[in-house]
Length: 267
Image (cartoon, rainbow, N blue to C red; front, side, top):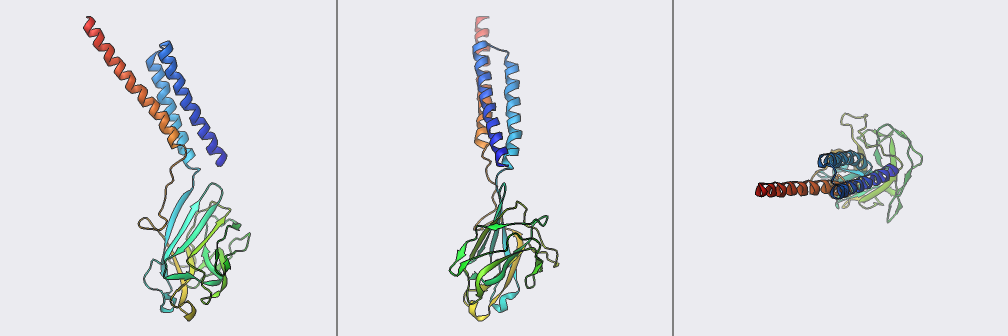
């Protein structure tokens, strides 16, 4: 995908140069204006199609809300309790869990679970660390079918350093997987959650105020990482292609108007 994107950008640059040459030929050699204009707009149209394909090579980021809990033994109030951001790139994806400041990630095995479209076998990398050490996961991993208290079973599981609420691990978990498959709802419960994360209320992590939270609702307003549609890298180049065509069209109309006035005065 990265190689394809580079080829498309090179093609767009060639289109822009082609338009410049056409305009120079018309001015210097007085070629048929209509024929040149057709070439200009045809080139711009082809460049637009190429731009659509180039845009697909960019990362797509979606942020989901963590909305529901199993009450955390009374320690979890009304959500949302944080967000889960899925940043899908050309060859890999980065997933980031961010809890609100009132909650912390638990310690121990199975602190976060999720599912992916197509159930691919994946490898993990890029885990962040807390004060207790680094998060981790078995690699390669596929379809572990692990139950996370009240939120069903999940294919992929992340482990945290420490053990239980006595060793909370802050508010952030981030890691990268070698797959571009999107998050998908599990099918082991009626609600079909995208993910589940084990959390605790920071005022009582060591006193049993712990439990799981899940979600999957897309966050579109007032999120720490809002849903983003990246600007394609080829857009400025495409704009220059269209800009050249529009500028030429404006020049042509002005020249035609001046010519018409001169002919009227001569008559």
